[in-house]
Image (cartoon, rainbow, N blue to C red):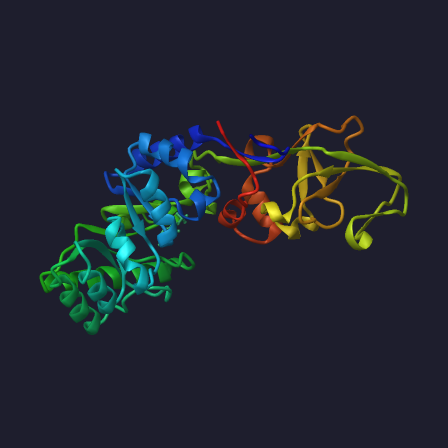
Length: 360
Ligand SMILES: *Cc1c(COP(=O)(O)O)cnc(C)c1O
């Protein structure tokens, strides 16, 4: 039961389409579907069912809690934690056969002390300075020591690009591959090597190695240089008008009367607010789509509701549908991100549990 008028509409066909496009453009690299943050706000179960039906069998998440949520429902797929897991919880990683990112010998010693082997991927810091071994001689010694631990299955090695200047990306890639060659000279090879995310998948196809980690792509989010790609956005946010107020010239709307009517007008209330994950800074310049046309936000976004101008909507009435965002209705998530001064991923993953998800 929805029990409310606002909902996120998830287009599972779009997700399947986007996966197939990635598979078609690929050269047989293994695709890790990155589904952290509740599958970028979409909700896990239906999305993973769809992805598995498309042949995906490896999922990337940020945290152990996310990995556990997947392993409880989907026992036949692999899950890899891309972030740090505190030593105190590594036993859960081990029990559930989760693949763990590692970047210290100590972490691996803790894992090695557990009941059975654990699969790990080494993270290399090629310049991002977030996580990873600095690629130096000490790291080589540590990785050799890790390789010698009987309960550690050294399955992969990876790094992550900053994606600012092209020259910096090239330098990161060169540093990573040079490090791989040094390891190889010491007899250390890895089944999986990876550095590409969604943007670099097409910006640097020559960097795909034999695995790629795609997140935003799967949900139809394109970078500027992917404008020509046939990706379809999978998420839209919809509601219905709950009330219409008559506002006279000079009267205010909402907190602080931040909006004041410059003429007699109607204002529609929509039951969605920042507690649903709609950015509060849509207060300035934000708009929704009603009857195919934009309706400007009036005043601030409230916790649970917002108000919009009906100056251009003389016939709109209570109960009419509203698109808060949705590419099909001409308001793609990229536009929301631009107005809210953030990125598209944040718009998607900030959707809170209070918003029911409807799958189509
Ligand atoms: C989130 C994440 C990805 C996926 O990034 P997208 O830009 O959404 O494709 C890939 N790799 C790592 C390490 C990540 O944390």
